[in-house]
Each structure stands twice: as structure tokens, then as C-alpha cells.
Length: 386
Image 1 (cartoon, rainbow, N blue to C red):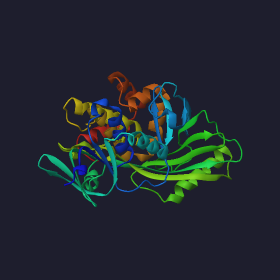
Image 2 (tube, rainbow, N blue to C red):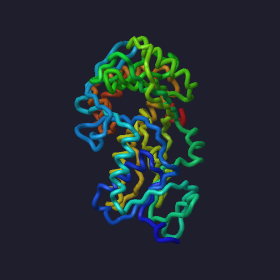
Image 3 (spheres, one colour):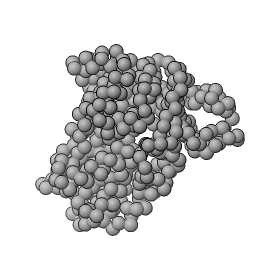
Image 4 (cartoon, one colour):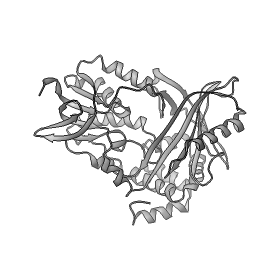
């Protein structure tokens, strides 16, 4: 075994969660003498998409933001709600800019090493764990693994699960059609009426915006369907029929109450989607990756279990909301309208950040006044999957 194959920590995957964790290790002086290897299965593709999140004050990524907003709109067939993001600005950045920024910082640290290889499996060997690569083996005291186990896909079917699936276009227009100071959080006016589906608009310039059509449902659609809804939306609400598509993105994000943290072991910690870092009820993950990476470092310092275990009350609430959307998918518009109409934006964002007081949680649940929540709550007592 070569000396260069042995590290204190190995991070398998150079995506969102792996880079967040690497960035936190790099910024914490406690780990100055630790050696860390990042194994990515392929060289970065020049494919760009966008990460969005909300945040109070100045954050780590403000210098590379595509844009940020302190105002937003929610539209439904029942009316419009103006949302105040002044306490928690809504922020968006490019995935390529994020990766370049983090890698530039990390590569200055000689304790870090990047390797392009495919990890075939991870095994325990005496007091070390081994990442078995296609090219060679890599040894560490602990491995952070962002890969989803093949067996996990089967297990997820036994839990309440949906998919957030979407297609987005960054469009450029000849005329100034967009208000770059405000964005569209959700718009339910043009959609498949049998599903929870909405349009999302992030204006970057007066003549450039990301328009995305998103579903929260069990099954994905033909790509052409999302694109039809985007074209209809642009025509009806912006009077745009001629435009240039600068970029396109499509994706599928799991929304599930499967307990991913149970896939972690003493010496192997699952991170990212594989660690349950995607918020089950919203599909947001960027801020969770940052918060959970910081928490992992704190756990290491205090000799606690490394893995991130979801808070019980929020895990329960995610299960109920997902259960309602799973059994009554067409009710999504009404549920989100009531939540956003009857509560301040700050209160909702704190709730989605899992930072609410018990009283605020109670008020938000009561504000939705839905018989479907009661039905699903009762069913959840007897069924794991809804």
C-alpha cells in the first residue's frame, strides 16, 4: 500500500454535499493537520444549473450569487399573495460558479487531494475503511459517502415518497419583460389540474430569467409537457412568444420519508441525498448541505456520532405533508395557498428551515385547516407508506 493512499477522511463524490463538507473542513483550523481525499467519479462536465435557497444576512456565497431578491409572489386560482423576503433573502447561484469557487479555495490547502476514480464499494478492514476504486484502493479512518445504495431504491418504495421533477429554461428576450427585483415563488394558474404542479420564475435581468415548470408527484412526465407549460406561461403572463433559450435544465429530486441516516455505520457516514439532506416536503437541499456539514464537524470535535439524524417533530410533519400530497395530489395548490396566505413569509421560512418554536408550528398547522391532514395523520398511525 502506498503512503499517498492513506488519509484521515475520504469524501466520495465531488457534488453539492461533498464540496460543502470539504469547504467546511478547509475553513476550520481544528482540521489543519488532517489529510482529506475527495474522490469524484468523473471530470466535471460543463453543465450548469442553479441552486436556490433563502438566508438571513450575508452568507458564504454572496460574492458569487447570480441574483437575490427580497420580494416574491405566490399565485393561485384563489388569488395572489405578496411575500416579504427582507428577513430571509431568496438567493440563487450557478452550480459551476459554486464548484469553481470551492475547488479554488481547497486546492490551496496541501492537506486536500482530488482524485478522479469510480468507487466500486466500501469495506471495513481492521481499524480502517477502504474505498475500493476502479484504479486503486484508498484507506481512511472514516469515509463520507454521497452515493445512494442500490438497495435503498427498493426500500424507499416502502415509505411515503414523491418526486420533484422539473424542466427549466433560462430565456433571453428582445424587450425588457421581467422585474429583476421580485421573483415568482410558485404560480399554480397554468398547470395539470390533477397534480401539484407550478411555475417558478427567477429574473436575472430585465430581459433574462429562469422559467421552470415543476411537479410534486409520483411519476415523471414527457419532457415536451413541461416545455408546453413554460411556453403557455410566457405567452399569457409576459406576452412573450419569441425568445432565445440560453440554458436548459431538468432534474428529479426525491421527496421521501425514508430514514437515510440509518444507512450510515460507525465508520461510513452517508451525506447529501444519500444521507437524507434533501428536505422531504420541499426538495430544497443547498442550505441543508451547509448546515449539516457544519454539524458533522461539531460532532467530530465532540466525539459524537457523525451522522445527521432528522428532528423527530419535523420528520413527523414532513411525513404528514407528503402523505397528503401523495394521496390527494390535486390538493397541493390549496394547501400551499393557505399556508402562505395566513402566515408571514418569515414564519414560513423559519418553519421550513426547522427553526420554529412549537407554538409557531402549531399555528401554521392550524392555519391550513385541512380535513386531509387529519385523515392522513390517522392513516399514518397504521401505515408506513401513504
